[in-house]
Image 1 (cartoon, one colour):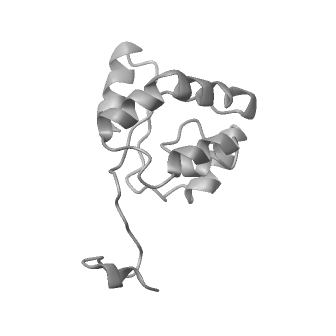
Image 2 (cartoon, helix red, strand yellow; image 1 turned 135 degrees about the vertical axis):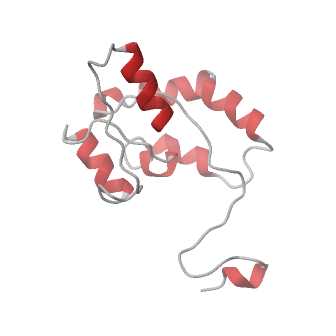
Length: 123
């Protein structure tokens, strides 16, 4: 985000300033931030495609497990016709996609403990 802020400041001659927030939840959870974005209260958000399927249900297809074999394949999909078609559905909902990125493949996380073996995934 810092690099983005630097680029925006440089390209706008300092006229546009991006305010960074150090914690991803500092402005609320992702769905709250998405609502703020749509309502014009928040101007930018780094969101997962999972939350976007609440606005455009077709985004849900990107969350199928093992849909992509690797990052190159995923990038080709979201940067190609499918990603463009999905992104084109968002402006009427108050959202404009600037780009896609991934946060890893086949990662499993939780808020309780590290996952070191299969049984760690149990509630």
